[in-house]
Structures are given as structure tokens and as C-alpha cells.
Length: 377
Image (cartoon, helix red, strand yellow):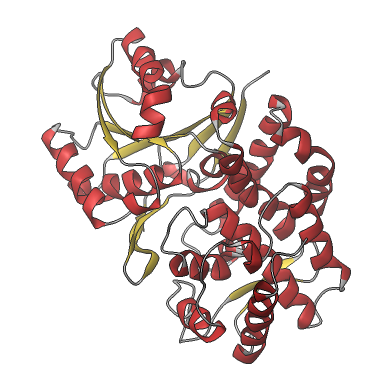
């Protein structure tokens, strides 16, 4: 299977996203041209380290590159001040200079955390993303959004800091637990829903085989997702306009993640899937799209075995009013108004800033009422 290369066009800060098999074992030769001295600092989590760090170390050793590594606990709870400070202090202890390269080796949590640490270290050092989850490969590793969560909400502290290179190794997807793979698929399906109806049609046919491990289908899905994100980022790097479309489902998602304590009760991609279903339901209630459209979205997500409704989240959830209040803390709020990404149909998303709060409240209330009646079959 050949290597796919997607360019993120940002002038002097442009970089490549390379997508293919065996890229972890080739990381030394892929990254060597970026190095001014043969030294890299790798930050990863305990789970990824146990499975893949030896392979990465060997790849650097083969090129005569010295590697030091720090591992952090896995999970969203690491994406906060404590581990952020730990990463920065460790990088300073390693005497990482502005000309050096830091490697973020892991999923979205590691990428966001290490990218932010790289952004502030010595006012900005270069970093490379080696994303090890489907979600990170198709979304968080591309585009330069870095940051951490706080008590007030998700990703409220961070910086735009573009990587110098992204290496997406398709082989690593075979090591993911089914739940983690499907969480990543929540971001893949988002791209079809927001701007490419043909890709969504393709996913309806091919995604089940992709989830079963079909590598060439996985490579196509990752490549198409990255192409879409790279195009949007190139045109709107700091989310002044079009890039907001990438937040389809995220206003609901971030509130639900906060409500569940950023825990394993709800993975980010699961929240995105539920959020996309709710966004299409809201669009239909506003008369923007036909009634069968949200049904089609939910049907596909259910076919994939994914969460689609609040009823699919275990444990207690706050009231509709409380969830709406959590949305008010979202980064996408402007002048106190909630911004939602809505859709006129599959592949036809747009940003709306004047959605009536009572309509959102009614949608959440109905979803919670359905939840009290038990999971939807």
C-alpha cells in the first residue's frame, strides 16, 4: 500500500501529513531531515509506551538519533495543569532548545498536551505528531489546535501551534480496542456530514469493513478526512469563519463531556457522534432539513454500534437547563450567543449564531425524557 501525503498549506509554516503503513518503524528517517542535532524528546502515555515505544526507539536508534522519553497516565484526566506543568518541566530538564524537535506520540490527549507544551516552551519549539488513534489521525493531530482542560470547561486554555510533520501509521489502528476505534469514527463521519455527501455515502457502504480492520479502506478514510481538514485549516487557520464547521456536534459534545467529568463514561468521539445526531435533530426542528435526514444519521451510527443518544450514556446526567448552561461556557460562544453548526442536509453544514435557547432546551429535555424511558433499541 502506497504512502499518501496531504499538504497543509500555511505558507512558511506548511507541513505534510503522511499516511500509510509502517510509519512508526520509519520515524527516524522521516524525522531526521527536520533535526539540526540528532536528538528528540518524546512524550507519550503509559498505554502507547507499552505497545509501541520500543519500536519508535529502534527507529530513532537506526538513524543515530538520541531519544529521551516521558510517559504520562492515559486518559482525558491527564489533559490538565498538572501534567502540562510536568511536561514543560521535563522538557526543560532535557535541555530542549528552540532548534530541537519534540515528538507527541499518542492519541488526542497527548497531542493536545504536548503541542501546547511545545508552544510555550522557549516561546515555541517545533514538534512532530505521531498520532496513535483514529481520532487523532483524522482530527486532533492536524491543524495546530493545542490546549488543556480546566475546571471551567474543555480546551479553554491553549494555543495555535502547528506541527512540523504528522506521521499517521495505519498499522497502529489494528491495536485499538473496538470502542476506541469507533470513538475515532465519530470524527470521520463528521467530515462527510459537514461537507462531503459522497464521502458519507462511501462510509455507509465501507465503514463496517473498515471497522473490521480493512487497512486500505482505513487509509482512504483517514486520507479523505485529513484532506478535508487540511483544506479548511489552510483557508481559516484560527477559526475566524469556515473552520468553525469542524465543530459540528461539538457544542453538545463538550457539554456532555463536562457533565460526565471528562471520564470513560463518554469518550470524545462518542460525544461527537451524539452531538452530530442532536445537531441534525435540531436542524430538522428548525425546518432546515427533511425529517428523514437525522434518522439516516442515527441509523448509520447505530449500524456501526455507536452511541447516538443521551440514553446511551451510563450514569446520571444533569437537567436540560444545566446542560444548556454548560454550553454557555464553550469557546464558541460569542457575545453570549451559542453558536451551533447546523445542516440543510448531509454534507451541507453551516454556522448559526441565532438559535433560540428554548428550542435547544426543548431538544435536550426530550432527549433526557427518552433516556428515562430506557435505551433506544
